[in-house]
Image 1 (tube, rainbow, N blue to C red):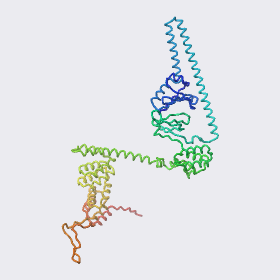
Image 2: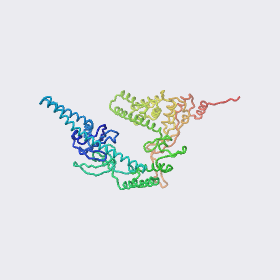
Image 3: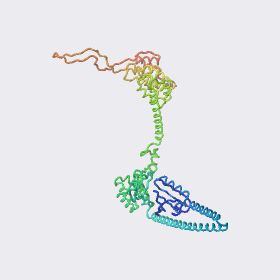
Image 4: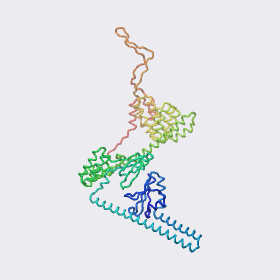
Amino acid sequence: MLIFAILRSSVLVSKTEYDAAESLPLNPVLQPVGLVYSGLKLHLTIFPKTICQGKHVVSIIGERHEDCKRIAQRLRRRIGLLANLCRLAKIEQGCTGLAKQQSRRSTPEDASTQAADEANKYRSVHSRKTQNMNRLNFGFRTVWFGLVLSFSCVSSTLAQKDAFDRDALMVKDSVVLRSGSQLFGTVQSEGVDDEGRKYIIFQTDDGGLLKLDLARMVFRNRVRKIDEIDREYNQHISRLEDTPDAHWELYEWCGNQPSGSVRFKDQRQFHLERIMELDPNDDIAKRKLGYQYLREQDRWVPEERYHQSLGYERRGTSWAPMKQRDVDRRHDLVESAEGDRKAAFRVWSKEASKPNPNVAALRADLFRICDATAVPIIFNAAREEKSPAIRALFIEAIGRVPTQVALNALCVFAIEDQVADNRDRALALLSQDHFNKPTAVAVLATYLASESNVYVRRAAFGIGELGDAGSTLALVNALVTTHLVKPAGQAGRIQTGVGTDGNVNGLSLGGDTKPVMRDIPNPEVVNALKKISKQDFGFDALAWQNWFISNHTHYDVKVRR
């Protein structure tokens, strides 16, 4: 559906002049809102300028965009004074042409006399048409002025009688158009046209009649007709007393109906607002409207203003801190960047899985992809990668990123990687200037308490290579660690047991023994302590502790005079 409006300061054209200018077979029907022409599956309405701020309004409503556009273009060219001027120009041209033809057949004096007579006759005919059109315009203007004046008087009378618009609260039939707009009025009738299409005749609130194709013009056949509950509400609102008690009673009635809080949502909102206007001290109505009481200021404020005073804003159906928006925006940017890195890394992985790949190109592309956002992605891929060479590329790429996440990843590789070259490469990258050595040593020191003795020895070796004294006490505590060890059994030996009655009552094979806890000395810890302290106390934990205390304790001595 297309609604097209034209504004032009001109006189109102009549039906005869409109047909003469446009040659359209239109059927005029007089409606309370104006002169309506129905035809070509569209509705055309011309509103006089008495109610349109001194300008004519022509609206076209039709099913096809092409029909409305064509009619609108014709109206632009020929409506009102423009059509009259064109018609006068044709009359003058016809008079001139007739004079020229007569001049060829008779004497100049006779030709001029006949041309003047014909011109006078055309002018007199057009003058009578113009007078009739002016009378018709005056009649329309008078009728519209009377309607407007009557409407104004009735409106002023109703305004004096009621303080609110009862008609606006009444429930009416509604139609949702495909454009998204919604019409309110009355469904007059329904039917099926010659082509088998369903349609409805809908009368709007202003009195206009519309023929709406349900398939082409109505959104998903969303036509709602009022039912008995709606009619009962209309009866209540027509005789409602404008008092707080009456509005409360109708508010409760609406809520008690089936789905009343939804179907009468606007009406219930109005009744609460009207109650608050009539009784400003009604706290229940204020709370239902969302008002909150500020004790500090001793006044009621709307819910939105109340939450804003606390630093909150509405987000959807709840309230969230105003600064949360910036946090969410940054989070969305990070997620978007992660998505881009994942897509780029998937392309890189496909290239790396091809036979005989270009190692130099893969190395350059991986270094380009790997940044602070891509480090977790590459780290997870490295944990699942089986090729030591590919893992070495991942370790080198992560070592180029100066972040705490990259440092933690390198510490994991330095301890848990199965290949010694990769572990050594990770330790070498941790010693770079853009990494904090004390932080790296603190991360490695967490492995000194691991259940795996292998991880304990690798962590001690890494701390010794980095050479930081911050984890001396952690090393001292890891000189001898306790671990669950499964002792080796005696393979091939069968153990049996004989009962008092001489029968064999037990049979076991060697090696099937339970794990036991054992204290295991760690030489790598001693070597790390030697590198850090330049001392050698072996596995004597007490001596190492005394040395550390004597060399790393600062005394603040205040001398009194």
